[in-house]
Amino acid sequence: MKKPLLLLVSICFSLNFYAQDKKLAEECFKKADYKCAEEQYSKLAAAEQIQKFQSEYYNNLGTAQRRLGKATLAFKSYESALIANPMSVSVYANLASLHSQKGNKAKALEYIEKGLQIEPENADLYLTRSKIYYSQGKKELAIKDLNQILSFSPDNIFAKTGLAGLKKNNGDLEGALADYNKLIAEKPESLLYNGRADVYFKMKKYKESLADANKGISIDPKFAQSYVAKALVLFETAKPKEACENLDKAVSFGYEKAILADYYAKCIRK
Image 1 (spheres, one colour):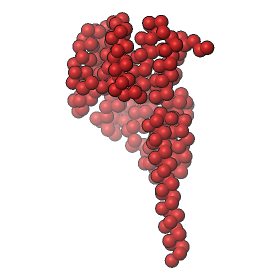
Image 2 (spheres, helix red, strand yellow):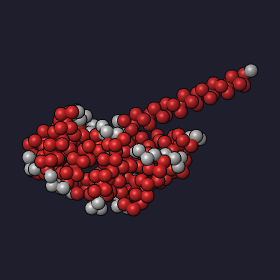
Image 3 (cartoon, helix red, strand yellow):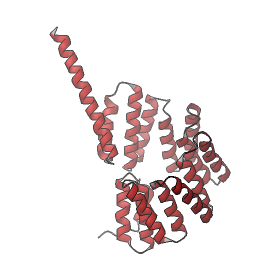
């Protein structure tokens, strides 16, 4: 009787230890401590025997590595996640997004198509494809994808802001401003204030832009995009030191530093 009892105790101890590792990994990610998250998810992925869970850990590992600027490792982790679970739509979305960011739009579109075959109503995939279409000058297709999201998710804030953003990028600043004013009146969120801050920035209304960036930060102090929006205003108003401090905050909360390379070039380190 002693051996089965010892085995049961050993299993319970292992499960408890495993649960603690998973909790630590999740806490590291929430705190934007991506180095810690990378270490923990790497251990979890290597030890996991159930493929579905292993895929989830590799997927999270890839995202942590991506936030750390380790794109090559992120690709490998996402690909491992896909091998473990070829039906994981979130992995297809991450691979599409990363390939798009690195300039391989064709590969990104391939992953999006595969992901949509599994889950035809996935907003993340349509959002990424809309951005790709816009970058390729296919504005009508970009708008179609955003409206497609609203057809199955009428309250999707990313699709709504995407449509407002397209107006902004097409030079219809007044139209974009009207859209953001309406959205903010309905549901004030950091994402919306950040979008309107960018519209004000393009209008050269720096006081209003800075106020909206600060409002976004007050609502969510970890919303990285608002720190970027604030930094842009500070650069334009001859405050590079403060601007660079806000870029650093954005990166600490998960904004990919590689995307900010042009802005960091303006930073003066003493």
